[in-house]
Image (cartoon, rainbow, N blue to C red; front, side, top):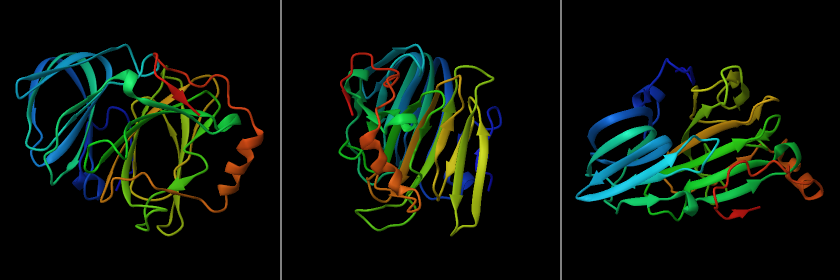
Length: 275
């Protein structure tokens, strides 16, 4: 299985492609209209750029405008299983879906409703846009955006979620979808698991996608350019519980003595920010 998919070499990743059970992820450009149906899955549509409207059972949901992931906070529309919809507009959308047993209600999350969090300290300070999180009326899907300032680390200390031992850790399938503000910008992503015999360190650029079926997965943005990634996750439990690499977990204790990077948050658009 190829864990790192390069920009232009992928458009959609389904469970059969990723050798896992639940998560499907795609990025699409909508110009005009397209129709779809969620079938037996719940679906999250995340507006990356542009403006669109989504009609669902006679209700019209307006998403946008969003000039880009580095400029404004996201619009996210959750659609339940067994739902037909039509998208119209000019927009780039990320779509994440997973099987669901219950048919819940559609939910539109506006930018001012996003829980913006400044996490970490020093050169591990980053911005977390918590979107579909535990407590959100979804069954299996979880969605979050991370903005990492140039030269900083995120997803740090390295953590994993590949063992079912709640409340400390749950099993989650995950993708990292990267966006950068320039073609020369790059980040460094590590994915490692002694249990699975994996230690991958890769240069990632705009539009690349990493599959995270298991293992610890820290990220670093190279100096000069801020970096963005979108995490979509799915598992048996609607939880974000993860465990740190025990060799590096001590780093959290150093944050009390460090200032947060003053560049963060990078994007707020009027939303409340918590630290």
